[in-house]
Image 1 (cartoon, rainbow, N blue to C red):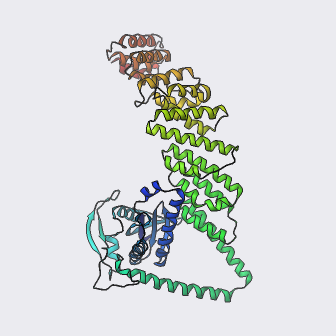
Image 2 (cartoon, rainbow, N blue to C red; image 1 turned 120 degrees about the horizontal axis):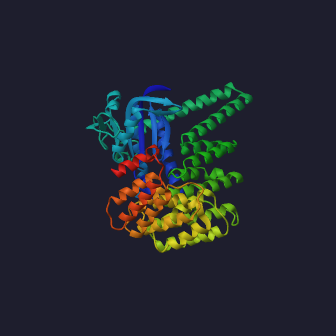
Image 3 (cartoon, rainbow, N blue to C red; image 1 turned 90 degrees about the vertical axis):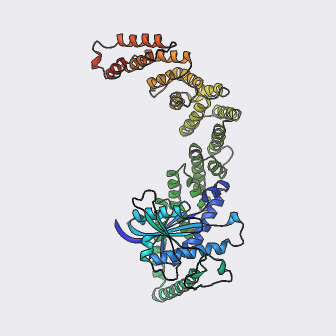
Length: 534
């Protein structure tokens, strides 16, 4: 690991979260691809290094703070130029922040206070603006760059206040303005750095042409093959490194370039599926698969694997409550009607409907989804992860009188002990209605389970309920546990002097104490008893 003082830039798309909620995965992927096509070349022309993309954010580093600020100005001018005449929902707006500080460099990534401060400043930056830190201001060449002092601000996670400057839009410096097009007067930074960008591009092209010409003169056919092999290895390594850091956009760009040149990338595409599986349930998981959809469709085996992975992602997103994204992920797959995958896709659709009904507390809709579960399980079982999700839905369905009978039937006929953990969790949850907990405990008492349940916690939770009959049943359950810690719970209940339970709790506690060992002090549960007795 090495450290270096660098200018760190963060960019972020304004309103990205709201846009993704209205768009499909393909539209979101296209938005990020358009963003990368605009921003990345500009950053690289100003000698910047795009370290990674974090969702809609870009982290880049520059050895020169002046270059970093100039790149930020060029990006905002280019976006303003491209946004002109476009509908508002098609426009792209960024906020950009630059900070200079010491960073740690590990495996192509950067960490440290310098990165954290840049990220926090970016969060403070308004739409279409550029903010820089005091360290950037002190180390950059400030000629012909308009700057405005904003003061010191306390940033989250930063121990000391940070000095911040802004680059005012539509300001001039010493009356100098560079116009590159007839519309440049409407650009926030007057197109000044865009003109510089054009010059840098021409220089780069000349250097590239010279390098290619020299290479062509210096090498023959065998050397060309060696260079091609080195290039392929470099691109594959870059794609694998990007996948390891979950920078799926950069990986997709590298792999598409390789495929366009006829290079085999099936191993890298299998890695795509593994890495997307590792982040299942996040808003990035299905979007990652969407970036590689075209490449994955080209291979029948990978196409099937991609479909199965999307089914898994849909389940994970449903569990995480990301229902809209789960629905879009599920809509992107299609299987033969009688295949096992088509059956799982049907089950995922039921999961989505049940989760949406629970969220909206739409009891009749939930009842229909529970019946669809019954119909599905009548025709065959389901994988354990799906049964676990069904158990969660069924346990929640006990909260509603109209869905309890169907939920109970699912537990008895299909889920059995697989529902025990979910039911036990609802049994001790204060959010569960009293009658629901009563039904759940009654069902758990009749259901053999492979894993032991914490009956002391379940019965103790029942004692907090309002129904007298339920509390008395809990007292009887604690008596049957024959544990001294249960006696302590019963004594505390008796100490409440509730007419409904005081006598039953006292008698049950006395029975447990009478049946205890001759020397209760040696019992590991003696301490709760002594405390309760006092």
